[in-house]
Image (tube, rainbow, N blue to C red; front, side):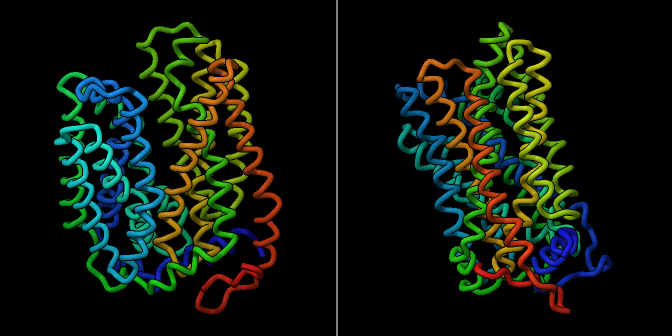
Length: 423
């Protein structure tokens, strides 16, 4: 069966009820509210990286200790988000999203009020538990308002707020923290989160179609080997983003010899690439299901080589940064569609697992690059580390996923995706 047919089956199974276009008034406002929430989440997450030195100085803490605030957030996403998703499996997705935004505002406010670095680490963990669960529930709501056959585009819409945060939210938040004090980053982000909560309250549809499913249904995804294969492929493939993004500043100011003032420009170029790739990836995922993933990861290999080989020249570096961001993000909506294909009865949990995989990718890319730097290989060795992990991810994908997709059977009349043998 063609991949496009499988994509339609997958997205049709993302919700129990499929609304007609007439049943989805205010589609644009709903999607805007969802993206505003992810913008707030992304601004807080990425903005923290820009103020580590500020709160480390205030708390008289070492940089390695202060960095645990970033690590704790990632642990919150990887550990807390799936637990929240499972615990709230039966709850209407509208209620889940409103509760998650409330928790985000509380966690971010606690971050602003932190009296010590230990308190800040705990507050960041609490805030991190929101991210994956929000993306999972948000993807279900976005799929509902988009209608059948557009699950990839729906997830890309939810991701859009995160990509915009890398372009505007994070740099602006870092500037605010530097100008007014690091606490103000979290104060502003909490206000944006509050506005997102108001928007969600006003514009999310009130319908039983968004009621949750059984806890057993969500948990079933955890016992499916193909789900974990996709998670590992995602973590290895998307590590390419962080093998480069983490080290943009030393790459710009080191090999190219450019002043520090160029770093924000490089970050913005990378973020624009992510936004473009995310939009393209959503459409590819709906039409081809897995080809967007393969195309994105193949292209990211090419652009990683461009950065590693030509990164001493600023124009070449900027082209490479745009390409890495665009091609890696192109793969993410396809990852969501594949996860939904292999676990159609756990749509919220697979969205949470997708974000958990991205945070694991963050750790893999950053740690892998740091090891290469510590070995004295130079800052341009980080893209080579990313390339190695992407190649391993592609090899795993090629060995498992095409055969699994080819083993499916035609969908039942109701549109549910065919079971995959061995899953």
